[in-house]
Length: 429
Image (cartoon, rainbow, N blue to C red; front, side, top):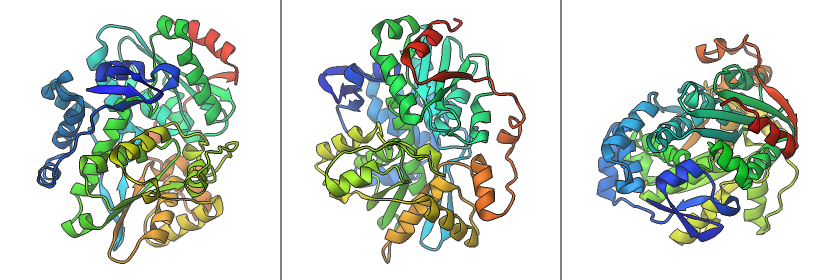
């Protein structure tokens, strides 16, 4: 598998290099040189397979002979040990529940596959994973890499801007997991990570790698659950399928569009954002004008400069798809609250991110279409806000209950790269 840097097409790397590096020169994202595609009969055959077998074949279509199909299958089996069920919400709408993994969020899929792929390609070379999180990535990455030999993990997150239970889930592990609360928003954390990757001395000294959705292995993992969703639908539903994706850093939507590029039958996608609406405004007005990030109920989507957007534009360019074919919209906190109540009346308990995707889907679905919205996190991860909005008590799943009363092990730093650099260089081997 060859990939090229979107900021410097002359920089081309293998899949193994892309997994190890994360980013290219000038903080450029890697993108596949070849875009594989299956014909309709191959898609039907794939959809008849079990989740792990199908996922291994999808990944091998990208990776090629760089990693044997047997090795890919083994790694996928180790990563995807939990389901991704489609649950009916209304006659014409279902939700793809992606929160049945160990940290109750969709990022378990990408985090665990990346850990497996890094173990496959890195050998005995020490690696330091440096990543930023707006909530769910941190937990997924921490648990995926926890206790792995020759891997240190450093996770930056915005202090006071993720839910208390999200924080407990990954800031109580210790061992090879180091968590740092930054005095700033998610974009500040992400900027610090990018700065670190621009520091060649630091990169070499620590063997830096990133587990954000900018890493190609995480992105490829997410393609697989779109196929899993469609495999659970009837033929009639598949023929008129609309998928609404809660969008912050836009990795999930990128993966869905890559699934469509492979041949998965999706009529259209909806990019659903919160008040951090850089992409909807760009699509409406043609100008990329990020504003200061604002805190919302859907905190994992509090991103004003989504890293994965250049990949979406590149895919549309390569496939000659018109960007105007992408549906979009932003949902306020007030509407999010009302939508959570609406879903509860339908008998389904969601959380703010899923509610935003449902709202955009319900408002845009046409007669005869079938809609899926992504349920990216368990509602108990947002226990305080969901309980307040719905006026009901949510039981804690075991994954959260086991960590709820543990002490936080985080370090606290200002939004200052020099201080972060000193911290990183002082980490124990």
